[in-house]
Image (cartoon, rainbow, N blue to C red; front, side, top):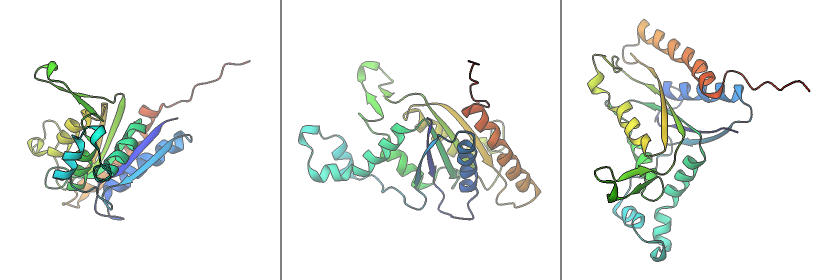
Length: 222
């Protein structure tokens, strides 16, 4: 059984294209594999709090010295990490805000990228002391962007701090396969935008087939 962690980061509701796109991906996956388990985490409507000095202190407190207050400070972080740990595929719906990720999504990453939980730290590794603890996860990012040309070789490639930041952070969550489907031209609202929407939604089922498997194994005749 495959477990999807479906995260939405948009603050919009019914008008959000990234929400519609991520839901289309989840629906297509479930249609192909009815045994799929879906964990839903809506950080757009219910954002994780920003980490605090107290949170950091709790993270670096040895277990033997943990207090009830420190455990409470990490309660949501523990819950988010447990969801992540159970997931085989992270389905992330997010808009691009000011050329990067929404604050809600950054807060989610800050809550789940945690020493001893999702990554280990060892200075014996030299200049690369951090290593992910989890492994084998896939990430599918489904995004919407106001402008265009954010892909490789595009006129705004250097301004794309959404995909690059997500990619960097995802490494420390055990992600070793990533895919991105994006809708562009949203601020223009012209024919290019409509074509981008159609192309993104057409791409979704093809990517689902690629990741979930186009065909179920055939049973050998008795």
